[in-house]
Structures are given as structure tokens and as C-alpha cells.
Amino acid sequence: MVHKNIRLLSVFNFLIGFTFFAPLAIIYFTKVSGSYTLGTSIFGIVMLSAAFFEIPTGIISDKVGRRHTIILGSWARVLAFIFYAIGQAYWILLIGAIFEGISRSFYSGNNDALLYDTLADENNTSKYHEYLGKTSSMEFIALAISSVIGGFVAIFSFPIVMWSAVVSQFALLIISYGFIDLKTKSANATNIFQHLKEAISIFRTNEKLRLLSIATILDNGFSELAYQFRGAFFITVWPLWAIGMATVISNITASIGFNISGKIINKVKAEAVAFYRSVLDRIINFFSLIFPNIVSPALMSSTSLLYGLGTVAENELRQREYSDEQRATMDSFVSLGRSISASIMTVVLGGVADLYGPRNALLMMTLLAFSVTFLYWKILREHLIKAR
Image (cartoon, rainbow, N blue to C red; front, side, top):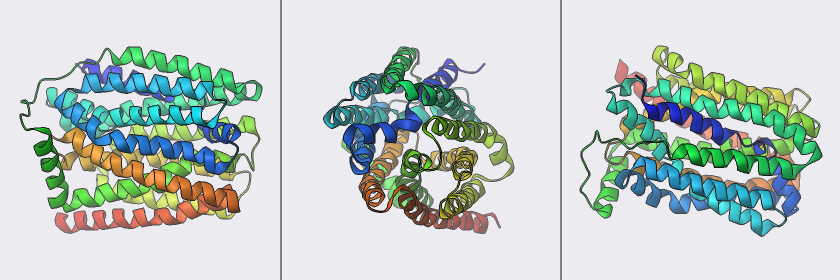
């Protein structure tokens, strides 16, 4: 019998994606703040806030429990969306961004660890990547649905879009109280400083984990931020109402990618999936931006199929290298790096967009992202050498 936590995690992830304004966030933030630089800075504040709280929340997850951590994160997320909906001024958006960052820090590490612990409770960790793909796909199904709704409603009223998102996040908060903590592992009696020392030691001695972590950190700074920002480019070739349709394509293909990821990884090793996803993603985005036209948004959105496959593969690879006692803390270290990387690039991306336009800013990010492809090539090469 599939554990209750897995069923709830599917619903929980669906509600995370059921936000209505996600594809229009950069447009909304820029409208309220008055520039691309200030608009993208909201994403940067989210990342900085998440970075500041990453390690403490990871320790809370490992020491106090997954359930309490997910509840605290849900409260922070509701507050974030309330401030976003109030809008009106840049400083109000900043408060929302701080709370969203706090929420992300509670979820990062914790939610994947919750899934892993749940499967460990059933002696079924070998299927982690399959369940991760299925539960993660729910977020993108929700994003597809809410993007269509949000795109059309935004034509008439942005406030309605924003407050509808608040309602859906209250439902998420209610769901968070249904999770249960698992007692399959013996209690970790080490103090916090020893706990951190042991986690850092694993990163220091495990070369594969270091390469995976660096690749994930850089990928978030280049690709994830570009994904959040690309609505500013799409609107230069598509009308406002159609932006939601681009996001629908993106989220449907991402959902498919997550759903089939388990079967693909079972046939093709995770190392290969991560590398080939990175190659194809960069090439498609590069040519879509070099030759911008009405088809570009659809092509760029289609890469989400690869995103779903690559995300599960990369997560699977890291989870194999983590220790059970520091699982959430170690993932929080990676998330800390991801947040710092993205917050730095928000300043660069916004500044380049203001000076040279959104397309050139996204093109720059795509070129930089090829460095991540190189790291995944090294990981795949080492895997193939050891397999001989």
C-alpha cells in the first residue's frame, strides 16, 4: 500500500503549482516596481532569503521532523502570496519575497527527504526516482491549468489573479497538517555543530557529489532564473493573453517528462539522462533566441520535457550520495548555493535586459549555461570509466 505521505505529497505539489500568476510574475513585478531591474530583484530577494534560512531549516528538518518543517513552510508561503496580492508598492513585494524565500528554505531538502524516508519506511527506496517523477509532475499539471486561467483573467484584472493564488495556498496549508513523521531511523544524538561538520565532510570527500552540487547550483543561477524571466521575451513576439499558453505547453511537457522519467532512468542511466538533457536544452534555447520569431516561445517551452527528465535524474544521483542522518541538511547546502547563484544572476540579468533587451539577456544566460553541460559530461565520463 502506498504510504499516505506520498498521496498527500502529490496533492501538495499540485497546490504549489496552482498559483495562476506564475507565468506573469515578471510582468506583474515590473509593472509594480517600474523596471526590469527592480522586477527581477524580487526573484533575487526570494533567493537571498532562501539562502539565509537554508541551513537552519535543513537542521530543523533532520532534528525536529519533516512534518513540522513542511507546515512552517506553508505558513510562510501563504503570507508571501498575501503580500504579493496587496502589491501597490515595491517594498510590499519585497516583504512577500522574503516570506517566499523562507518558505522555499523549509521545503528544499525537507520534501525530497520526506519522500525518501517514506519509501525507506516501506523498504522501497529503489523506486525513489519513479515516485519523485510522479509526485513532481503534479506541480506542472497545476501550473498548466492555472496558467490558462491566469492568462485570460489577467487581461481584465491582475488583483483577481493574485488573490485567487492566495486562496489556493490556504488549501495547501491545510493539506500540510496531514503529513506524518516517520520513525524508521534511530535518533541522531549529535549536536548541531557536529551534525554540520559531518555533512560538510561528506561533500569534501565525495568528488561525484561535489560535481553534481556545483552543476545544480550553476544550473539554477542560469536556467531557472531564465525560465522565470522569459515571459519578458515572450511578450515581444506574442500578445499578453498568449503568454499563458506558452506556459501551458511548458508545464504539460514538464509533467510528461516527470512522469516518464522513472522508466527512462531505468533503461538509460541517470548520468546519461542528465547530460543529454543539458545538451539538447541549451541548443534549442540558443537557436530560438538567435532567430526570434512567433515559434520561439513554443520551442523554448517544449524543453520542459527535458527539464522533467533531467531534474529527476540529477536528484536521484545526489540522493544516492547523501547520508540518511544529514539528508535534508546536505540538500539545504546545495539549495543555499542555488539561492546565492540565482540572486547574483538576477542583478546581472535585470541589468542586461534594461540595457540590451530581454532577448539578449536570455541569450547571455543560455551561453553561460553550457558550462553546466560540461560538468555533466565529466560526471557521465567518470561513470562510463568505472562501468568498464
